[in-house]
Length: 162
Image 1 (cartoon, rainbow, N blue to C red):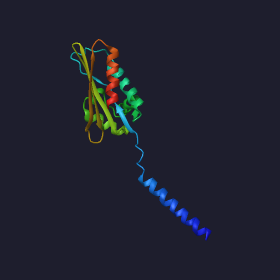
Image 2: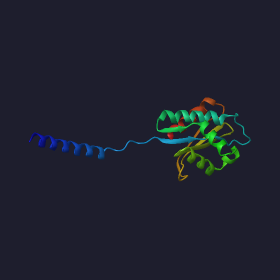
Image 3: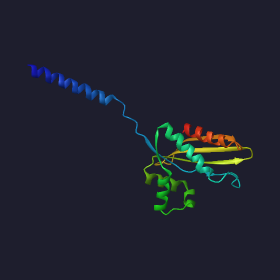
Image 4: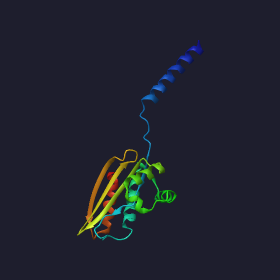
């Protein structure tokens, strides 16, 4: 009799536990994200050399802080480029970049560029799904061309909106 009561409670506990597990939402998995250096789209390459790398570093730092993505480090991107024997000229083609993203296991990628025209700097970022190539989100920010700190802040805000 005691055994039967214990068994009944055990069965009910198992059913309740199974129901609780079945109704809890699954934990969201962090998405792997590759971030490419920003392209300098300024007429005549007016901007500072290596500025794309500096702005990209700011974007990566902001995305890491969000905690929503696992970021593919720049060194891994460069290593895959070497292994695939692709030069930087091959990377102009967005589809080539997406293929590399798949090789790295990235599910999302960030592309973008900046340009200085007159007194303004404009920054454009695009978040893409690697499998479909579909643009999931696009963000544009501007800053005064002479305000380097403003450029970094624009990159930070743009990344936060992705």
